[in-house]
Image 1: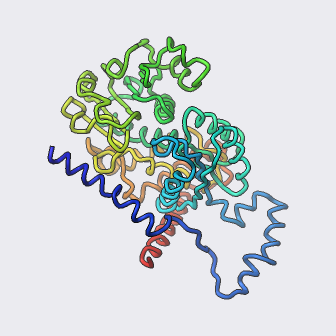
Image 2: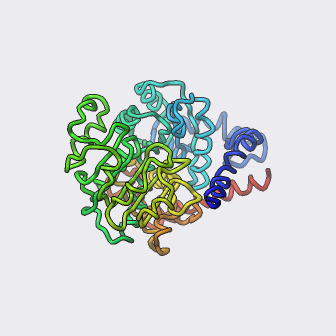
Image 3: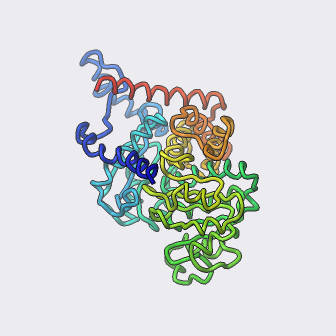
Length: 437
């Protein structure tokens, strides 16, 4: 109990410090010049009259905007604030500090220049239209904290309509990093993806996409048991027909046994449980874990408190436990995904971020950890392992080229070296600014 109290006290320190530090710096990001300015005459080159020649060149060849401007490295982080960190609809203004933090991670981990754009629009068609309008300024779009089920429609439509990468981190980011951790967890326990049964607690944006990625990796979708607030998804859940399209599809495809009930019934006999639901503890009970197959794997991803504490899951028989928290082993953290994935997509001017590119990223993340030596408390790398981001970027870029959606073709070494250089330069800039503060 004393250890538990200390953990909570330690975890609360950043929360207590946050308001004061945000107020001190009045935001986390700023725009700085990347060109030399020695005299005021330089502005004649960078702005008028010189910039007119650049504008005319881009008019003749629109693709040259990637050579003459920073569009090649720019990503818009777009949110309507309807799902602020799982806290609900706090409004567009309350979303801004979240997106600034995301932009900081984009730059420090991926060398990507990301711009927070919080919009006062709630309708899905308004969000789609807004993103289509701003597309000429950006090389990619990161959708963030958009409530379900509209987040699915917004992502699907933009992926169809735009020829730049569009990504929803709550879906693809969580699914990518979860898959990476699961690859190594399965290797440790000696189980094959095609043979396992998986229970998924929560049927929101994260778990619906996790199910899709697991199926693409080789897990049989009929062997997945998905639970929402009402209970297990199955073909008899007629109330979902015609409403939540993605959920209804899972009702028809998953749960081959036709199980009914709730969490306890879903987890019985499962090899893996992935929970992305409401904060715990107590969402998953010890008895639920005890009913699972031998060498059970638990991913309890809710923040700030997982659906079950890791030590409770271990006592109940789980062999490997992962959470969304940095103070426990095996953190499933989206920050392991989006910086490197966007780095790779931007570097080859990819027209999209496909599921296959995400799975390539997951496999590379798993490989980084495997090469260092995986064990029950280390199935996935941490953000401190700086080499993972260039490697992830190169894997994503290579897959884009393989799929024929890359505007630029580069060799593997060139991809790796280029990504590493951009990320190293970004970190050096931030470290230099930090010293000046």
